[in-house]
Length: 118
Figure (tube, rainbow, N blue to C red):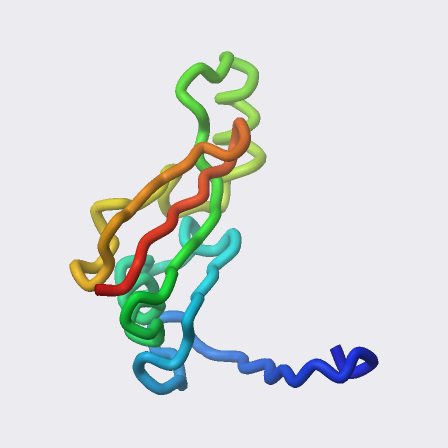
C-alpha cells in the first residue's frame, strides 16, 4: 500500500468494541471470523454501528452446503470448521439496524452474507 501511495491505517482491536466512530464507513467487511468469535452477535452489532446509513455490511465464513456427502461433512466438522463456535450463517444474530439480508452459498464450504444499514 505504501508503494502505491494508498493511505491505510491498521488497527488492532476487539471486534466487539471497535475504537471507531459511529457511521464512518460505506462498506464493512468481515472475512472468515464470525464463526470463531466468542460473541458474534456483539461483533455484528459493532459492524452495523460503524457503517453509514445505506452502507453495506458483508461477511464470509464457513457453512456446509445442503447436498454435502459424508466425506465432505466429516472434513467440514473435523478439519475446516473444528475451531468454530457456529457452523452456518448466523442470520438470527444480525441486528435490526440491518435490512435486505441475503445469504449466498458461494462455494461448497463458504457463504457470503450481505445486508444494508437502515
